Image (cartoon, rainbow, N blue to C red):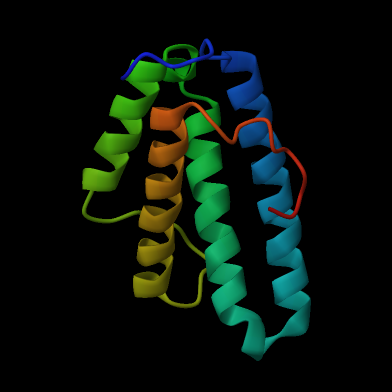
Length: 119
C-alpha cells in the first residue's frame, strides 16, 4: 500500500462492513416484496451481503495490506456459492463489482466513514 495520509482504522472498517451488511439485507427484503421486476436489485443486494458477511468476520481487517490481499484472493475465485438468488451470472458479476469497489476503497483508505444506508 502507498503511504496513506491517515492510519488504517480497523474498527471503522468493521463498522462499515456491518452497516453495509444490514443495509443489503434490507435491500433484499425490499426487492423481494417488489417481485419479478426487482430480481436484479435482489441479486445485487445479495452480492453485497455475501461480500460483507465474508469480510466482516475475517481477522485480516486489522491490517490494510492483509485486507487488500484477502479481497484480491476473493476476486480471483472462479465462483461464489450461494442459494436463493435469481441469476447466478448476475450474482457473480455483482460480487466481483463489490469486491473491486472495496479494493479501491482499501487502497485509498477512503470511504469507510460513509455509513449511511444509501450510498
